[in-house]
Image (cartoon, rainbow, N blue to C red; front, side, top):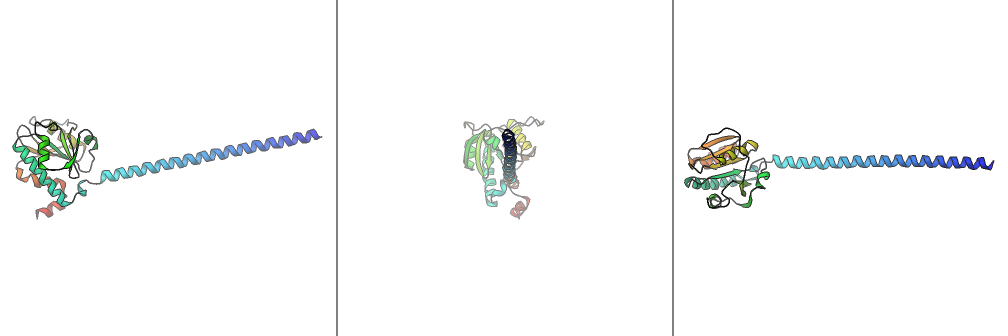
Length: 225
């Protein structure tokens, strides 16, 4: 009789233990699942927030961060340097970053982070300078770097254009950057944007053309009034 009682009690205890283990296992599985869901949501939140920040930074026009007077000054100083380089037939390639980041190329060049001055630009491109090969990148009104290199265009262009021109067209095909090129052979000045060249026939118009590239149509119209 007592044997049956103990056997029944043992069965009940065993059954309760199995039930408890099952409940703990279920609770543990639910907890793990909830933690995984929270982790996934957290990762998604961080990714989406980072993506939004990246897009906002990418979409913000660098040129809009400059005041009208700063754009006018940049166009004037850059024009002065380019005209002097052209007169001496010193080859040059100056690229102005706009909406699309050129970090990939600034990292390849020599860091400058200096004020844009005619003297500095001329000293960079003189033939004895170790920085004269490659391009200068201007970002937010400052010289970010020098002696960097862009991918050359595969487009068929006139044989009168050298590697600087091919690089200027190449970067304009991949980004919205604007480049000013001085031919080492002829001293001719041209602007590359959107995969095309704009020849500057009259250098007296260069400052107005450069400002037109930096400013909006509305701003340009106001300045010309």
